[in-house]
Length: 164
Image (cartoon, rainbow, N blue to C red):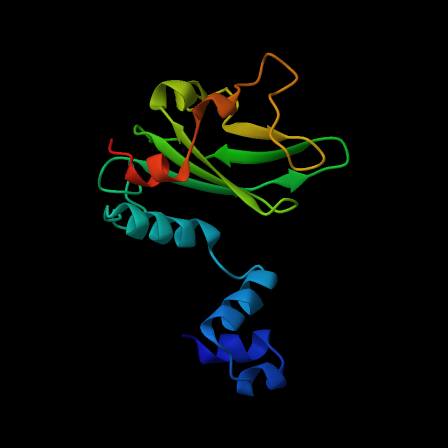
């Protein structure tokens, strides 16, 4: 770790505090200093029993060919959704994990390449949205131009035991 960087980023009293792992994770999470994508990759890899590819490897995050996407639901004044993107050079099934903070619920998706392939072409939209209502409950898109990703929702056991 770069000690000088750490010392510049945090107050002196933070340097001497003793934290449990959970407290430290909360501290860094609240300051938006955790790479959530990497954390999700490690958590899913460990839970699935499938090893991760090398960092920045083309094609997939896991050796089974699947890609991991983690998103938190975003609340705007008029719309509520989670965004999944970054499909360039992806060919396998996406394991999408979405956290909804109002209800505290996690949602799991297995999205086949045939569903997101249209979003990898140049000139097209490069993200897909998973829609919610203002109370944090799932809803289908209101416009028929959006893909309804709720048809790809799955339970946690299927998500973690999926084999490409």
